[in-house]
Length: 136
Image (cartoon, rainbow, N blue to C red; front, side, top):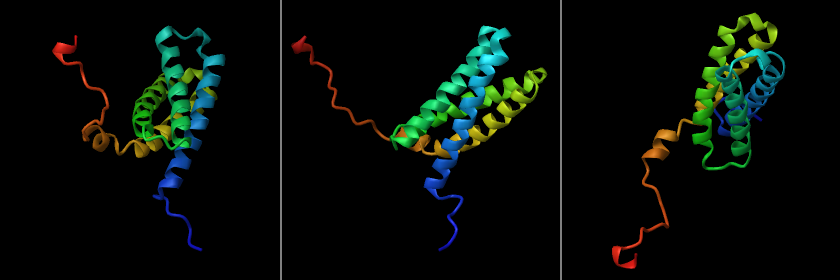
């Protein structure tokens, strides 16, 4: 049996889920330990990263066709959180680990969101039709 390919979609998804699990956990730890003295904007960065990592995990595990969009948003949240960790290095080892985890999740989520442009350019299928003026 040959070794699985690092570009195998199932492996890429699993790696992203694992990275997001670590990032979510570390962001939550930062929120409960270090960020108690942080301002609202700083707390928001960690909260959004943890929440979007959690959503990405959920959507990927369900194999939702919306997961590329959630992962796309998670990419940006992880990038911002990594930058915040890098700015607050006085937070020590926890922020260092959190920043590294965010960078891994950022890259993984970027790989999972590669179809966003393609999906966003497809015409939307909708069952909604606006009422005609005579029906109003």
